Image 1 (cartoon, helix red, strand yellow):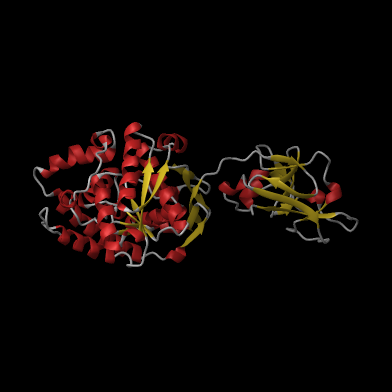
Image 2: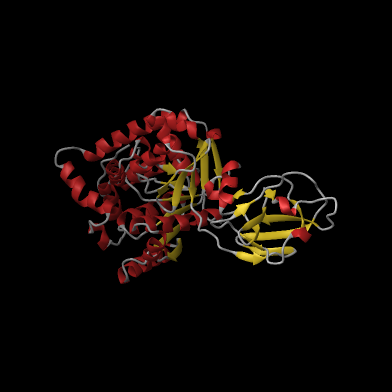
Length: 448
């Protein structure tokens, strides 16, 4: 719904925002408002204070540590405005360049990550029900074009939505002109970000260079909105063909049947996108990444490809898995009785009842040599399973269909390169329990 308002016709603007707001949340929901100090966010803060009441909103300012004194001045401006207006304000100072370097991502992606970390923390602490952002019609156009140039499918080209998880966008149907008119009518000051004109950033390049050129001949904003609606409808239909029960979600990982990769491209790619989202990878994904995952269909088991933000995708027997890579752990400690801190949790070696079965975690403690250690796998490790022949540990894991990503996370009891016990799986034949065993032990690893 669009309104051609004049500077004094601010009531129509507020009515339109109220209608948009009512479509995504309830009147009783407390809202956090992302406030940069720029025109858009100051407009949103002011109109929400009017519609919801100052006591039902909290302004949130994230100072990115990018623009030096100018950024500090923006933060102080927002804090002072809120103090003068009687609005609660939370300021967070983050080091975006450091996050970008550590995570090996762009400044834009790092800034987005830092903001979302702050927003997620606010929601988890029940300080608000939703986070309101000041994206408007032109922002949606920029996003659609960015997704086009990145090679996105229908999911990306549906553009921004009024509600996306904890995020809501009450101004999404409004134009920049309407926002500026409202600010003028209300006499609300705002800050100009000097980096908005820096076209080294992708979004600024599209805003400052691409859109004005296209707008000379086409109504780019109307066209982008039509494309968003058409893609949203197509994407909803594709998604309706996929059941959530087809995905197996772990911490920072998600799997689905590898056979889904053989489905038509539109459907197969949606399986991949859904798995990426469920695994926690929701940004900087391009068509080339989706196609790389789909290419694993013809590869042998264990094949994998790298994805952005330290994620990977691997073909794991009958499953396709997207997961966040974990650094290889080199922890090592001497074998001993009791509970011992190890890696991300604890290992425990405790007494057990005598059991004479293959696959039992119980072993003869007196057969463990004095130089035995507890560690993770290394190249050259060999294993002689209970009543079996000696083989490389790697071959044993392959025979047991243990995915590659788990193999370096299973604690072992070892003597040199000889594996005596694989935690949670099997013991070596040489430490098996016999009738003469008097010291039965079991080996357990817990991350809790």
